[in-house]
Image 1 (tube, rainbow, N blue to C red):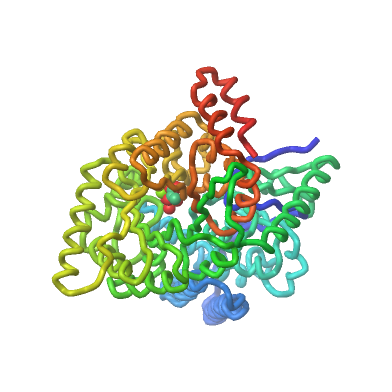
Image 2 (cartoon, protein in one colour):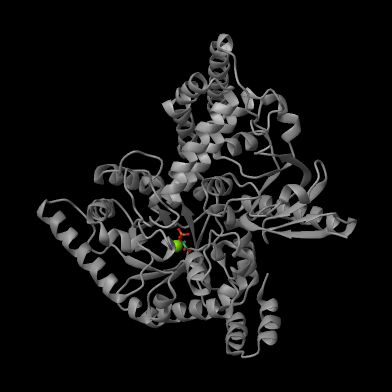
Length: 580
Ligand code: PEP
Ligand code: MG
């Protein structure tokens, strides 16, 4: 009988293929003494392993496709920098000399002491760096142990990876780039969440992926065929003929649909009853802009600027930010650009030399996003200036994340006004009518949406956080991920309330959370009255296929009935009819 394992959705694709298991912690490290006369040989053995590790990363860099985003290359560079740092290039050698022990043991001691320092810092971002240390140490370790390569993806292994579903504890960004180059069908990891670096890259590269399936190694066998259904975050094992037939047909249909759609990407998205739906794109990296044109997006509905601040030693200056935003705007050829002000803190930390979050106990509820910006004007004002300056060059909107109170919004609006006055005094151009919008992603803001709507030019519903905060589940904690439910009546009521507030105030309401890009919810969202969607460009084709089949007035009647429901069973029955 077909078995279903649940994990966390990383990307929504579907894949069928044989499993290839990669074990990260397979190394059995033993300690042994080295006689005095062989110490220099042992040191050389370590140096050689280090050189091989460097060569491996160099070859990763040289073999990644030219179109690979600069951000990904930066990850690999940062691993090379770690290899060259004395913590790995000289400290283990000193341990070999001091303790007269084998190189593997010396590297293990050094790794443990670095990890101990990282652990004691208890900082979410540094925890990600801790994983990077593990990846780099493992690359050296696998060269020291002449056993099978566990995690390195050499070119001779191309055949082994092609068409396979990789199952691993964790996969580093650099490994994922190479694996994609070698044609993996999908990947499943034991750890990780939807906002890890690897997850972000998986989405950019469109690789079906699921994370957070505990003990995955013990549940699957090498070479068995499994199905990864990223739409629901599940994998199917022990597949029977019926399931296999269903998924093969689904994949074929998806491919035909995608091909058909790609031939007509610029058709407007109009419902059966003639309502034109505005479909925009979410981007993290400027490299994603060509895809926006390819998919015929109407503009950018969410530009996550925090990625400009990551993987670097210093905060970008006002000028650098201005150039970056102007570059994105120019590439949009007149289409509107919504720039979100910094949403740093919580799980999105930077290494610009700043300790951004000291609310370690619960960073998602701490100094994050607009709270952090209002707390650190040296960080916020240069960004406000850069966004205002770029508004003089074309259709730019500014969007404020994680608003929770009107006082906070008033402070932001005052700061924007004073920044405009400062620019005016300096005779620097800006658009005084640049629309300013707010993200509705905290339940308090959704409940009081009409108060926010009265002061803003548009609202944008961030369902990723709205769901996290409404249902009290950390969105990156795979232990409670099963509770993350976009269809929870409380979530739907908050969305409905926000859309109604926008309609009453006659301002646009868009949705830029992951829910907007999930075709299962398109009918439901149209029924809730949503007319503007923003999502990763890869999600555009399926959504644009569904829209012409929908009649908004009929759906709206169905949704009104649904939301009035007081009986949960009836609610569940009715919602089924609204899912695609
Ligand atoms: C959201 O919360 O839905 C959102 C779009 O913002 P982010 O995912 O960047 O927190
Ligand atoms: Mg958010």
